[in-house]
Length: 403
Ligand SMILES: NC(=O)CC[C@H](N)C(=O)O
Image (cartoon, rainbow, N blue to C red; front, side, top):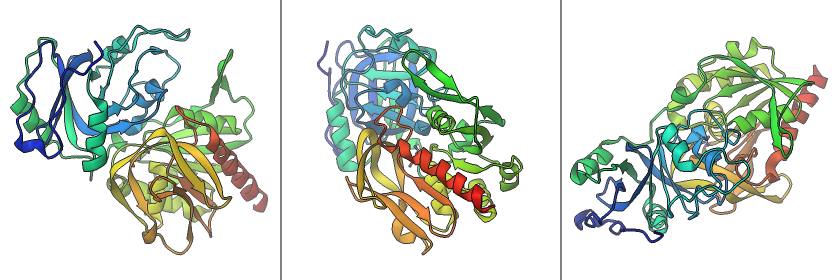
């Protein structure tokens, strides 16, 4: 069955009755405004509430679902065929996915890929992730485009019994991502060393056996491929918890410090992260941040962040590097953004989104520190921006020379 079994009411349709439950419906996406998108359940039975966002990537669903930055979110995939290459034990960004649920257009077919070890449906179930397929994801996406990312829930009930009014109330009672610190939930509790490098055909993941530099990575919910890219760029990586203080970080005598991506509202993460970053900046050790790490660097220098209406999520987002004039196609996943007008004079805006002109990167003019809002490690996505890891290592090398 490939057609959606039913579609939700139009935006602002809290006043209109939700569509009646169609025969065979075993799952639904229920929005806080009362819209209901009926479909068929996949993955675990149960219910998960969160912010409903959409991702436009055509490949890499396993990396997307395991990106810890999706904590607290329900991912709608705009690409209709999700699951047809199955899952494997390699393409993961963290062991336990933090995303809440998935919303899919088509039914999940049997996997057809030489690397597949498990169908997506079974993999979702093993991670206790509910999903709904058969949804008109184009309509969900248009709602988000026009009205912003709503709060909602995915419910998967194999017996087909749903208490829709209670579910709408539950979706409405969820407080929303604004003001939510989720980095603490997904960060490592313990410091550990990392030497795995990026995957290549015929070799799988490699090892960094001869590192030139030592980088301490602050884990707000780090994607593994960032750590692998740092290893590839010649770094030995020590990963520390999100709550690490400047002293905890500098005790490792790092040549560079990396601030990772992560979920939630950067403003709510500032209490422990901002003083630590300010301490690292004061030490003069080179610093590089990605996504939440970019937002945290902006907050640490006195800038402000804001919630975006719909966010940037996908593997085809054009960004201009203002320092070179070059355009790169980037992988992105963010719902908050740095407000460039709030940045102090010693901060230069280095990258902008060519979709909406929003801030995508910055550099301090008086310290060796820079950051980007997007994901140069891709996974999934294009590798146009890999040069940023080399830029970081060059910065470390230049800084070492001055010492
Ligand atoms: N990928 C990320 O690091 C996301 C950062 C932040 N949680 C946001 O949504 O903007």
